[in-house]
Image (cartoon, rainbow, N blue to C red):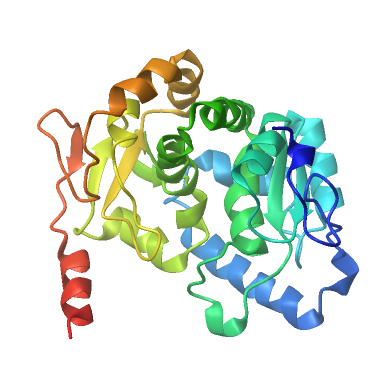
Length: 290
């Protein structure tokens, strides 16, 4: 199935892109972006991978207001050959993979409301652009994202998208990286969240485990709250190598007969940075009981 075989919503192009319409953002929306940006920018130094902060500077994202995707794309294209394109919201898997495989990052153009400042389920322009785009200025991570998109197209043909989605979740969205001065954040779902930027590194509750591709693809994840386990890569180079050198077809086949692992599981062979107490998740479960 080609990208153009998927029916795009009204107002979108065949590839599901829409104009960002930057001029339509209100002063209040720009002010809210600046508020979110200032809060995360004050929190992240010393906690986030330095490549993320370098990306903010390279792309001039410290400029006030919601970034103009056209200007952002010009800088990204000159650096790593990537573009940022606007979409109306979540897009079908194959559309998403096609864009990544062609070095286009899809971003929602809407911004959360002030009432949603700490949490919203659907990714908005702050999550997509502040969280994801700075690392696309890093050549190694930019190559990883393209390789992931190419792998997604193959996974689609093999009926294995759910397995591959776990790789994206535990790296691109909620990944940690080991550096000489300790663990650092790099996943967009963490760096765009004030609460999880603290929880992922400081809280005793979650497990922090060494990255292992096969093990990770067996592991469920949470979409409604902080993660119960985070996976730690040694470097972006190692992450890229693991992705492009793996033969995914037999990997998917080998996983078919294995049970999924719960989000809090620690296996005997895991490389454990932190054995979490799981107190946060247990307390939440108690609160939800009738």
